[in-house]
Amino acid sequence: MDKREYKDMWVGIEHEQGRIEEVSLELCCQIRKLADLAGEKLAAVVAGELPESQIARILDCGVDKLIQVEGSGYEQFSADAYTELYTVLCRKHRPSAVFIGGTSKGRDFAPRFAARLETGCTSDSTELVYNMDSGDIEFIEPAVGGRIMAVISIPELRPQVATIRPGTFKYQPAGRRYCQLLKEKLDFDPGKARSRRLEFIEESRDDSLDIREAQVIVCVGKAVKADSLPLYKELADRLGGKLACTRPVFDRGLLPYKLVIGQSGVTVRPKLLLSFGVSGAINHVTGFSDAGMVVAINTDPSAAIFNCADYGMVADMDEVCKLILERLRPGV
Image (cartoon, rainbow, N blue to C red; front, side, top):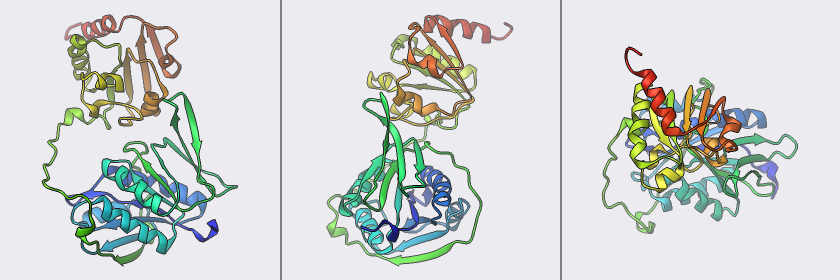
């Protein structure tokens, strides 16, 4: 395989009911920078119909090409349909890299079409580096339970395929530039699909569970007691912020999955993060690496969380939480 025959970096645009998933736009903004370093074009791939207002959001990210796929079989998401679509398009246009949002849908079909193309697929990278010498992308991510940061590359095969978790990169539109429109006609026979949608129930939106844009976050770790959770929820409310947690707290069934920060949850960028009883495992820490200020409270003076905290306190988490709440009472 001659890698020089593969050009352009692609971002797959995921959308549902006429609205683009934010992770797709986050990727467009980040891969714009990567494509510039590589001297390549950035292309956005859209299957199915999207309103002009949503297309405009893609263009605002500075894409050089917009590949619009028309045809039957994309009215509803099908892993089989998208696998075939990206397999056909990649064989035809030969992109150097394809980035897909690490949603339940993206994680479903991205490894499938990568396998058909006999190339590699990485997931959950927290950093992307373009190697000027080799022309390869280096995918940096936590590994071995978060004990090391692995650097993964695909040196021989193309395209380089990756899924990236929502919130990993910032949505910072670079502004419009000249964009080439490419239209592809690809039909998918629904009869080939090995699964089908029986019913669609729109997820009820609970703003209290959306912590990605919170400016203040109170995060509790595995040391939290179930009967103490109301204290931390009250603290978050008083500070005008959101309550969050580490993966072990969710595993115990104490808080919903959407409140998990880290590699297996969401990435946040608060101005203030209060961390109570959190050990500081790298797979959690990578979820708030861009926080403005981190204050950690833990009874273990050797806890790893203190290594990334601006201020640390070796103390009982409940006692500190109660003291802060007393200070926040009106009139105090």
